[in-house]
Image (cartoon, rainbow, N blue to C red; front, side, top):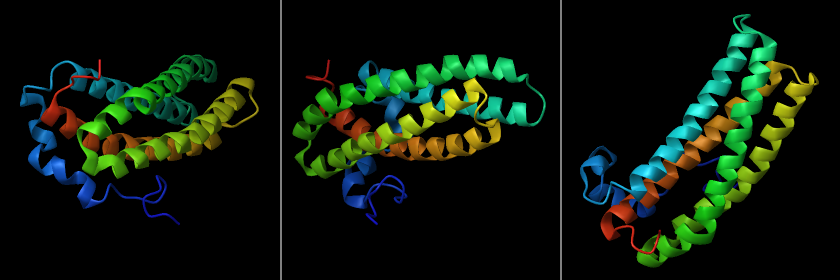
Length: 182
């Protein structure tokens, strides 16, 4: 198995995290190039994390008898649809515009952008499975517990991808600014 595959990696190789040493995560917000694009982009990632957390909590609440199934279905339809739509759009913008521009700014990290692009293709399959499972729950054909197991796997892989993406991209934008990305 490919050690850099989304399902098997524990993070990006050190060579692709070199800029992170110069631009550590705990100093991002204080950097002059943080406001604007970086802040907006990280807010999008936070939204994805909040949506998956809400969907997980709702599934657990139904399983524990603390939430009505119909209320969970309404939230699943709304939040699940938002998650899928927004992730697809986010990945398209990154693949078509951000990754090519950013890899041009920092050629030594091209391999990292290739890994993230490969993640997006893997995420397409994960989003398809998520959608199939969510639709099954909405139709009463899939148990909430089974969907929650899929959701936990989806959430873990999405979290791995988002963290790696942030650790590769944010330092590049902090170093070079967001010119050419708007």
